[in-house]
Length: 254
Image 1 (tube, rainbow, N blue to C red):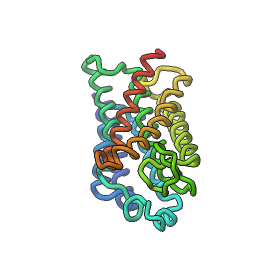
Image 2: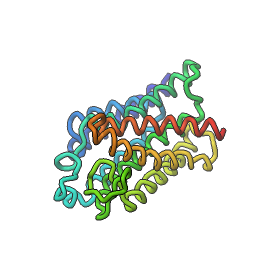
Image 3: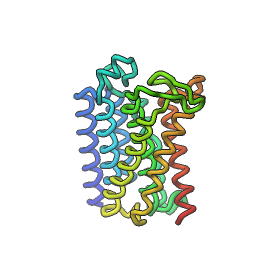
Image 4: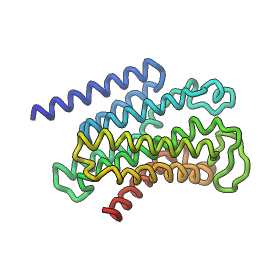
């Protein structure tokens, strides 16, 4: 009982600090900070406090990538927001699927529902964050490449074009997926029972993250370009697809 109360208190404190700092530093709008608070609470309470640490790591790396050479992005007209700030829908697009995974993990653990086995929920969560991290780094840093091509036609396109990719961006996509996945395993494995497998299993979120970034680009060049999706719904769909692929891969190898 008291352990749960303390855990919830820690989660509320961390999320409050996160929301306050991101709003005061103009990293998130007011709706963005409120959304970040809500997503953090859901993940920390229903998932695991250690999951929340991985989420905070993703947010910090995303903010850093957004601010990287911001003046150049601003001059090209491809910056995020006005000064790099992200709105509520952007936060929800990246955080909704991880939040759903946390809720499914909670229901599976405490209500014995056959939704997700407890010992793989951490890996699925890492996979979802890996997709978001790969796409964010590829978009925010890869966009600075002077040679961008359509992932569909292979033709040269302007930086920031929907579905535009570059070798530079692909390298950052892989780095984002790999670094996030390895960091996630290192902090979850010792402190959480939601990641029982050995470190060899980390190839799944790395692969899912990198492939998820490619899916985002394909959807960008097709459905987003046609107005069926926007940037936020594209991110949401891509992270959902990545999470499903991760579940299937885990089922195949375990």
